Image (cartoon, rainbow, N blue to C red):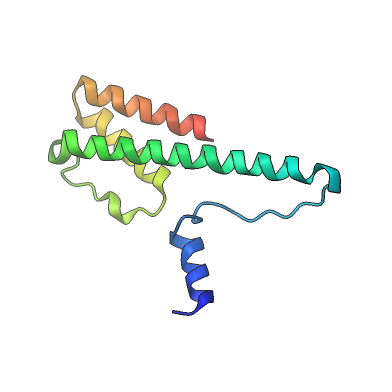
Length: 113
C-alpha cells in the first residue's frame, strides 16, 4: 500500500474520518491561539465520539437481541448515525431503563452539533 493510499484510507475510515482540513489566514502573533483552539475542538470531538461509542457498546451488551433483532448498525458508516439508530431502537423497543439511555444518547447527539 502506497503512502497516498494510506493517507486516503486514514481520512476516509481512520482517525481523521470525520475531521476536515481548514486553512485560514491569521496574524502571525495570533497563530498559536488558533492552533490551541483547533486542538481543543479535536479533543472535545474525540471525547464525544468515545462517549457515543461507549453508549452503543453498553446498549448492545445490555439489550442485544431484545432490541436489535433486525437492526444492523454495521452497515452505517457514521458514528452519529449509528448512535441515532441505537437510541431510537432503545426508546421504541426497550424498557424504562433502555428508554432513559436512548434519551440520553439523543441529548448527547444534540449537544454535539
